[in-house]
Image (cartoon, rainbow, N blue to C red; front, side, top):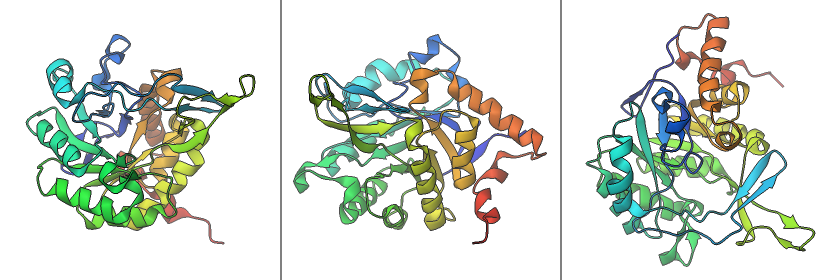
Length: 309
């Protein structure tokens, strides 16, 4: 079975990646298994300067998921290139760096600093970040701001630019269209949903920031619906990468059949570090059972087989 897929000019050995913020930079997982088996590693978010992140508590368990408010802790792009990149440079798979900033300039500077890092094949823009020049408005919640950000980065870099869409908007299709029109090479759907948990004994929010990002199996139906919608809007032009609630082969296949050309395994890495490998094997078995030679034949297949009302 051929599990390979070519997206935005890059050939991936398989469509199973790991999601940003759930796998570090891949170094810890190297002690568990050979991460070169993965289609790609999407790194923890990288900013221009180092960030300490938010104070504890930063994680809270929820039914079928978790809330996190880590605060994008990272060593900054210079620290990444000096301390982390030499280790991942030896790994036989692709790396995609999740990039964020508080201004357009910061996003751009991070991307430019990574242009010569050959192991990094693309950038994933985390647009669920506050734009300080716009009074804290999230980049991914303002279509005009989002469009300018993508256009500016695309005009200065050579590597593909992916945009990780926020699910916390009224109509994700409109934001997908903005990304396409401004030159994005691919879309990642979706980022975490905003949630909250109250400690009933202490009678206060469990997270220090009160609210956090909800992820895990609980958000699977929402993520699949949004992948479906984004694929309908732009899937004929650029690839959609599915993320959200994926923890086994069935959940991954839901994303793929809805239109995802690749999937990212996120929160599942915390409770089953080998979940991505199981999913790779599961997709291969699914293809064999249906006598399909290529993974690409599955992408968006549910759209052609929908039930007539």
